[in-house]
Length: 407
Image (cartoon, rainbow, N blue to C red; front, side, top):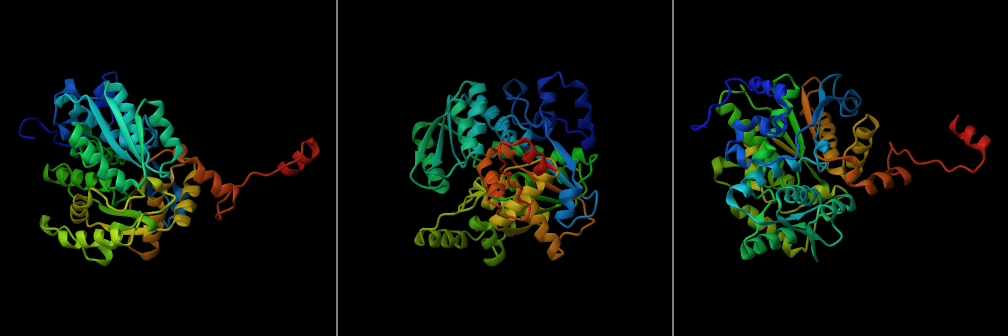
């Protein structure tokens, strides 16, 4: 920021809505480019990402224990590949262009592969995706294959794929596009800028986000730390990070092992012992929310910093709670993938505990589109798995009987 002028107010970015014929001003990432100014405009990559909405939703709010007008849903499913990942890929591929990358790779539970393959195609890069055996939603896998990515299925889970892809990238000189890449997180900061924008340039009281590999939570904490340092906001919001109970590494480490940022002096021995125990037990995470089915998050330490910056809390929710929350989000007009619904399920838990007040302003991040993992949705409804199930009705091929059923 000693090389580029930063606006005096966040609202100054609003002027770019008048020049949306300019591709960088149209982008929901690059219209905030002074706040992630790591490359020249000539290298910036965009596919029109960030055309997302922050929508107040009183129906979901009531379910989650909020008063009317207090819950807002940040819907990232409107991105080109259908998930929040496009924010980060836009920035990371811009850096890839700067360094002259020719080929890239990632490990993925689904959304990363879809987004990387889309951007790689637009940039003319070869892309390779590492997926765990049977551990990816077909909706997401179909995208990666359609966009031309080479898909390598590893006999293991996401954590195994993550280890392998790092070694392969080092050996072959491929550009790594997991959120271990810091430029991914730079792009994901802009989700928070758009939430502030959607609230009339005001900061919410809380941001609630799914956990997983912890790239989003890390990026959000960095965004608010920088905005505060630049004098663009007076205070950061509080941050709630919600994991699936079947993949709750962060929850266990923070709430039970007392792991904290500690000014950057994180107790590595606690992490090492925890992971050694996972290995000794042959532990593999399991949840219907495949996007956050991760037990060794690569951004763990960065996330601890975000918790420190934002006075954060960590919770875990069960698969039935996720599926119920997902059905409620769908019923009230948006729809989302299972991992997204963890944020709403977590909010409901936190209001029940009294941690979040019913009259506070809350933004829940919905990370991906409802069609990313349709099997979970269909099974929830047809098998009557929860109180919000809406199963199809079987009817004979008879007009009078059909009319009777509809009435």
